[in-house]
Length: 249
Image: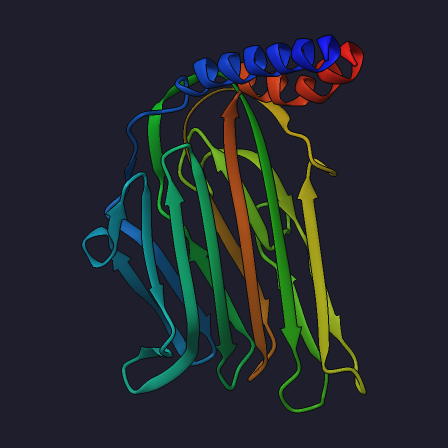
């Protein structure tokens, strides 16, 4: 009984400390006026669609916008590509989540899909984590290719302290995905850092994310990503809780 009570008191103390540190997360945050931009360029021209902040809504500490209906990206009367669906979710903790599905037109098509710039009160010593997953689908059974066109050739880019692609890079990954017949699907994923931890990134006051890639004609690509930042003390405490309890036991 004494052991149970002791562990209970220690767990309660740790929980109280965690609650005290969690108030260090940004209490306010703001997004840029354009919260989602999807640009497409190919042999028929170039164009972009832009979703503005007034088309979404803040619910508590979360900004949300989503569409499940296809949106055509056109240049004049020329169809360049189609945004099949998209979801944007931004939290003031801070965190940027982006999900999309696109189809290229009748030419190989360059896509640039940008989140908003999420700004928040500066975090002096921050930790970050990013992950993304892609699915590539061949439409005509003739093979498909997704080639990253980011600053260093990646198809997903997470940055802080500046709007993508002009900020400081936290992670840029997935340079190439290919489908060769008889396969019709290929999947690629990444985590930065690997596992369940966070990587140190220093002082941070804003963040954003971007997908940029070339997709072969008529083929489909979908992706989802998550980029989050936490203050270092909270991150270290959460890592240390299991060790603290284990040692006490």
